[in-house]
Image (cartoon, rainbow, N blue to C red):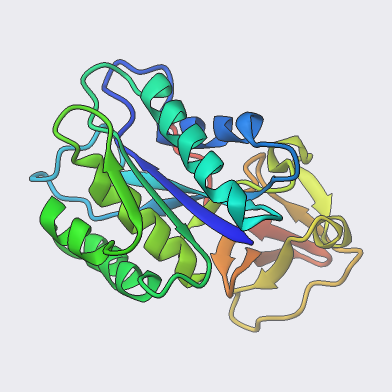
Length: 239
């Protein structure tokens, strides 16, 4: 069984780390038999009217667990985790849904709205009808981003991985075959869209962050030279 756990608004301007790291830390708390499939960062709308700490992003943890009875335990652990890890003055929110929940369709539509216009807590609660959505401090505005993170991630076509298969442990230059062995598909997005060969090398620029496309981790690359590809995007100078 697959679960989606959305976190948002856990930090303040003085925090040492943001919501993405809070989400990644959750792996250490998983009960026996549960496994982390990945953690996805979702980008929401940029607007000066929206209060956010840096980039207005939220995070969704994807957890595989063998027994539906573990859902309540995972939810309890997640609630305690966000309350413990959230910074003073933040407005943390938590959303928890499972693959196949009928309400995920509405939640996905809500997630797309969050990427294009300002939404309200009332809209978030309406979209999450039948799905767990809770605030854990401040004005609870984090429920908006948490709900959006789950909806967008469950769609299988949005966001980028900030954790998958130990992506921070890969070298800056890595073979296409090695990425494939760890479950990351390399896809060309240059003009000719040639197919990278298994022995070709990928320059990740020290920042391996696949996208969630087609419910799979996909690394988009462009050709830089014969047998050499470069991943698109890169780490911000201010992050």
